Length: 112
Length: 111
Image (cartoon, rainbow over all chains, first blue to last red; front, side):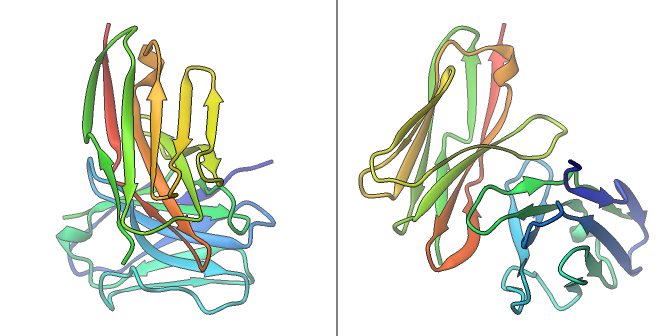
């Protein structure tokens, strides 16, 4: 079956603009995660969704970042008033509870 | 909060040699997972360890989970150019669905 997909694959935006990043998880996976990875760095946890529970937003770096997951499937990560330090690869992953995470190919965000 | 530390950050290996990368947690883990990220790619799951002292092998890769469930190691024998990439460990706790990822060990291989 299909893996995790993300769109767009690349996004260049001007400082101050809003961006939306999309994640389509593997069908049936109840858990969905967003991470941020700066060049040559590790994975920074942003937010986690599990079923109908309230999301764990503890990793969001500022109130400019928000995410939603509609119908327990597709998720959108929104960054408002983008800053240059937001430039990174944004990775989405999905999993069954307590099992391995399957990562999407990521969205490379560049803020100019 | 929980922190997972990985050493070394970089590992330069002669083709055919062995090396080990280590992962240490400040708290007891319920499980540990290992992922590999090839250059330009995304992390791909390798293995999960759950039991204290557990050892698992995948061809030339040997994974261990410490007795206290606070550390883990990945040992690669006879390194090949296909082993190039960054290896991440990620620790999980029983009361938390998140994984705490280490910073990764980036492996380069000299032919």
